[in-house]
Image (cartoon, rainbow, N blue to C red; front, side, top):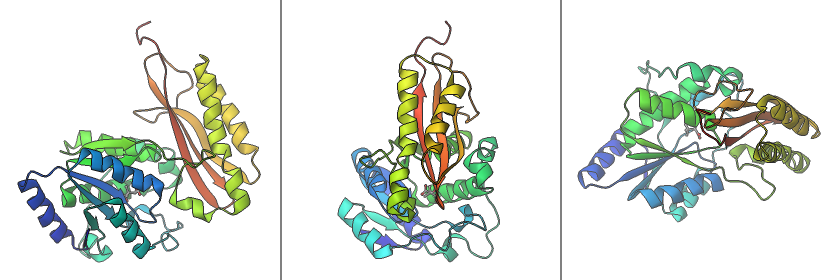
Length: 289
Ligand code: PAF
């Protein structure tokens, strides 16, 4: 595995790979690698001949009161994990090379970015959209892999790729979960043992929604309310939001229509740690009936 820190060098390598007709897959990360990231690498290896992992804690996507400084940066451990997972290139750029002094332009991620995670974290998706576009241009990837856990991020990246005619296929990987269902996340390490136990309530709300929609209920607002009660009953849990949305637009949805896809999305604070999770639901049946 080669470690590259200079965007221009990475871009030259990527250009060369393209000339050699190599299919490039990219997995973008902010480091603190866990099973979720490694499952993205495994998926990338199935789809592409060369796998580039980017590792960059992007300052642009953190608000002033967020955990940018506190964000874990175990570089040696991450590099060892990436190497043993079979990553070909680890692109870990210097912040000053990504955002030099003369840097001015950012990407407007559109209306979807104002909701949910976007309203809780103003400017977050502008930072994500900007760095993702930069990393796509630097790595020249044919396919980019993103985890479904950050479903709103994924939907926004898909929207940008479509709207801007970006020549990279965006592929989603299912959420990796721990044995009790908690979605794997770099933030899980902030949970105390008790909080870690209570965090399983998020997945219980998902299971409830799965069971209720599975028996034919379409009253999404009511099912979400029940999920909210499940999450709120966990000690120390403070939900920011928990509701169903249209899977494409992220507009809130109260009632399911046949043939349409929805997503149960939630953000919950357990103690001081903010966790997100989601579940996609396809309402069976014919759209026209
Ligand atoms: O999902 C993440 O880890 C980040 O938002 C991403 C896509 C690597 C951009 O910094």
